[in-house]
Length: 516
Image (cartoon, rainbow, N blue to C red; front, side):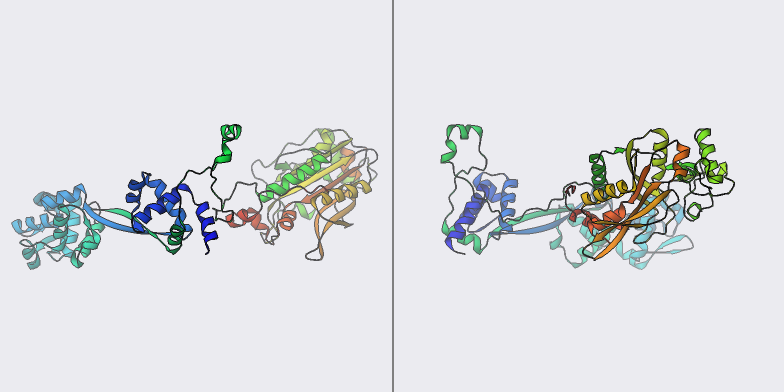
């Protein structure tokens, strides 16, 4: 590294870094943070912060040394005076000979809890034996009465003060392990020390020369006003320096695309509507001219609710008209489905299978002309796979007016997908409650293929006449999860509901709405 580069590094050093480095030079390039703090009158936290910064730049090295010290707790100090529980019990055995388990607390003077501990260690150290509930001293136990084992020696040592674990011999280390298992006898304290050492790069910086002078990092109003800023020395900044990775709070990707869709429809002049997740079969199926024996209404496809098992039907006039449409077409000119319509089936409570039921309610409560959309969760008895979930989101929309045509429907959907950045095409489809009907497909250039995203069409007279609507109504229902999968490049729909923090962090903070 040449002098110019070295000078640039020096210029970018913080004033605290320069002071610490110069202080290390005076200590022959190696010292403790405490000694440096005292020599330059800087608090220890600032010294360590500067040292850490210079260590990341390979200017100095920070060596860390952790030492552990053992000491006695209050219980340990008590044992140092009166002896370990097993030694106290051993003395009782020497006095009384064989002692039964029941008599132990009384004859030893130990608490029942300590007696259990003491017997365990007596047996482990072979100082006593147990036979049919009676404890008897052994020959090793008799010898132990006049000697001290390594556990006792360690306690004697610690009575004099804390001991560095590195200074303990083999037997005492084993005793330390034993006493630590017994808890509340030994306490371990850690002492951490640091040593700062100047590396080759730091040596070269010191050889070039480091000048300690005040540096400006921020300008004040007064300095700008008086012109004093002209004479200030400014600290250099390394724009390539490492920085901590920041993970800002952000909207969930699925919620983000929902908000994007909402903005598009609101900007297109639509009114947003909402409703309950729990719905009656009447609004979810019957009002939409879906026959009561339709496959989608089977238990395999729909979630039926036990409590409440039934929902209230709307006004009698509407219920009667819907029933007549199903049975014979009513006043629509249709022949209907030609079966006896059942009120009890229509009253069943279900988790809504689509948001089209919101459109039916909205038409029943509002007069055309109107433009409405809704975004909500829907539920179907789907097997969970990489592309299917039993719970997902759907966006629903209707437009009602005198001159509304199928061409208007295609135009609205084309504009909607254009704002999302997709090319769309339409192909014929069938739905019980719309005619003409179509499915929307968008083109994926990277896969060179088209993918279906939703259905749409013109509401049939069998839907509109019972609701009292005498103008054309276009309707569409589009899945959101599949759209999100395309937008974020994921192949498994479950990813949208997993708490994969890595994936969520990698997503951009925001993604603007495409309006071109």
